[in-house]
Amino acid sequence: MTGFVIEALRIYVTNPPWEYWSFAGWALSKTLTGIDHDTARIFHKTAWWIHTFIALGFIAYIPYSRLLHMITTPANHFMASLKPAGYLEPIRDFETAESFGAGKLEDFTWKQIFDSDACTRCGRCQDGCPAYLSGKPLSPKKLVQDLKTYWLEKAPAADAAKRAGAPAEGEAKPVGKNAVLKLLEKVDGVVDWALRGTKGVGAQEAPEKAMVGEVIDLHELWACTNCMYCQAHCSSSIEHVPKVVGMRQHKVLMEADFGQELQLTFRNMENNSNPWGIGSHLRADWAKDLGVKTLSEDPKVEYLFYVGCSGSFDDRGKKVSVAFAKILKAAGVSFGILGNEEGCCGDSAMRGGNEYLYQTLAQANIEVMKGYGVKKIVATCPHGYNALKKDYPNFGGEFEVYHHTEIIADLISKGKITLKKPVEGLFTFHDSCFLGRYNGLYEQPRSVLKAVPGMKLAEMERSRDRSFCCGAGGARMWMEEDIGERINNMRTDQALATGADRIAVGCPFCLTMMSDGLKARGKEEAAAALDVAEIVWKAMGLEEEKPPVDVCAPPAA
Ligand code: SF4
Ligand code: SF4
Image (cartoon, rainbow, N blue to C red):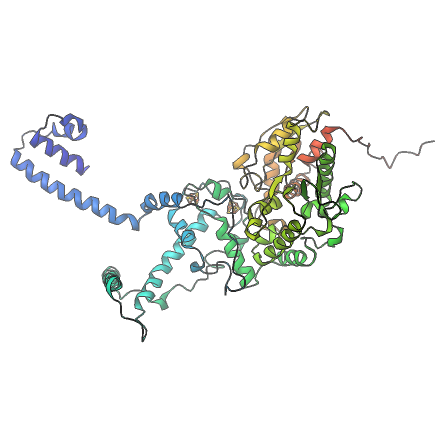
């Protein structure tokens, strides 16, 4: 406003021929009548100084106000990670590091701390956070804000402690540029003293709060499903998930302080390379009647079908493995499995904070796969798919990795399989977080479903990149959910709200969660959750369906 007044006074006195281009000042100058030019000049100079002080004062105020994000948010966008979506940097120095994960603020990278400064508190992250919306004590917005408040509390103390540190005996006196920096630090100290009326906050006054446990509550920390909604929708490119996993790593690797259910899961993974602890020698039993070869029998196959733990041990998951193997065989695809040489992909260990276990499992798998010269891998589980595709390359596991819906879509488009048997019912597709937001696979499963004769597909309100998690990611699959509403029930309600009686999925974890949700809602008879592979195999019409056996019927005469 003061700028327009200055402009009006200048135009009033000088009256240049192009004045109307500065239309605001020009219009205002027309109201200045009856002031002589000398008085106007004095007003102009006064207004100029007032304007200068206001403008400079405003700039100086920015770092102390919410307006700081005008600078930090664009900067954070600019410095956003160029790694694949949801990528987690592995711990690379297990042999030499003295601490693991993020137990204190200094354990975060500077970028992770800078993230919190960029938060505009818009709340978009929590609008689709399954933990927040189901009443758990986790809000990604609050998590970022709590970390920011904590670092603002800690920063002056750390700064003062740094300043208080005199050069140790024998330490060289600062010279040249260092001397200037020291001098500037002293000036800073004087300004601090003047502002606070104190000699500065000493290191001994640093807040004693533990970052993990007090600043970030443990229920909050373990409620995250790693669904990545927050990250994908953050207006400031803030990365929430790596912070959560970093803090979990601290609890697991440094303090061995985590839930009993997860302890059992990790022990099972260590002993039997699967979260259930089922004998690893039973891993390939699902395939024994299918004539599927292992790579030890025939390593010269095009694809390794990485079956994963659910596909190998879970009753529902095994049916998906069978359906997919039958599709591949019917299409004449050259593939094999690792059989008992396959191990858990380690995703749940990694996201549950047990990076050491994850790396052990990953390296064992990579060694076996490389031993057979594997080039292409197909997985039915998006968690294994994501780990093999994005995380295994960190340990030398460079493979072409596909999700089974990609392969099926390709087989349909090339005419290698024909879908002729119509399906009944109204379907809705639930986007798995690790397939959709993590890997952008939204179209492939839908194109497969649309190729099925008679397919009626209804979209949920929260679908594609806005999909609502089933509640099983981030190792939550193996933990009890005793706070708030069950996430899988909420997602089931969203699916049923479309009027659908068939929930199609592309993930064994989602399959379990949706099936449980239907049971919880008393809909297990009227509705069903099915994997895309099961729907396709049925639509291929190659298998005669046996009618259910009526055990109450009288024996035939
Ligand atoms: S990853 Fe998902 S569950 Fe975790 S904080 Fe973000 S939105 Fe919430
Ligand atoms: S979406 Fe990003 S900027 Fe907005 S409140 Fe959440 S963390 Fe902050």
